Amino acid sequence: MIRRPFLRAAGLLLAGALLAGCASPHYLQLDPQRTADVPASGSGQAITVMAVDDRDGEVIGTRSGSAMATSTITVSAHELVPRLQREAERAVREMGFSPTTEPAEGRPSLTLTLLHLGYERGDSRPVIDEARLEAVFEAKAVNRGNTYTGTYTSRRTQSYALRPDRDTNARMLNDLLSDGLDRAFRDPELGQLLAR
Image (tube, rainbow, N blue to C red; front, side, top):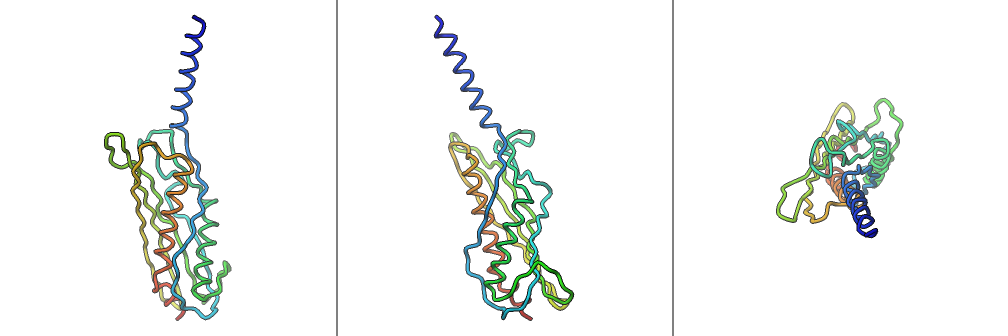
């Protein structure tokens, strides 16, 4: 007789813990890395490089797909921007330029802006759900009064039976942002304008 209330209480605690885990927010620390080769076009010229986060907010979506859910997914700008800056400088260096963060009058510049990072629930089927992820970057090269602006969108749809945990979400978003960086810095027009 004593075991039955104990088992019921243990079952309620376990169910509560599982539900709390599903509803808990995810604060993700991302570290995207460009893997694609970049077209070489520089010959050591100094280029001012700046990474900017211009998203509407740091919450990129919810794990449940409901706008009112507490299972938010947050990516902090102050943690992400230095990593984007590192990747932008690395790409510019591999293009053959000398990246700097110091602006100077007349110096060519490249600004990498994260315009959008989104995570939403896609179509649901019996036993299977899906997450839809999207990242939009803008790269703007300026040199001698000329400007080239490119917009680069990466999308990913991931099906799952069990809702992704924090590590899985971080891995999916890192892959998404890395693809966006690859798309941006593979664009030969950026380096060509900076090299003029």
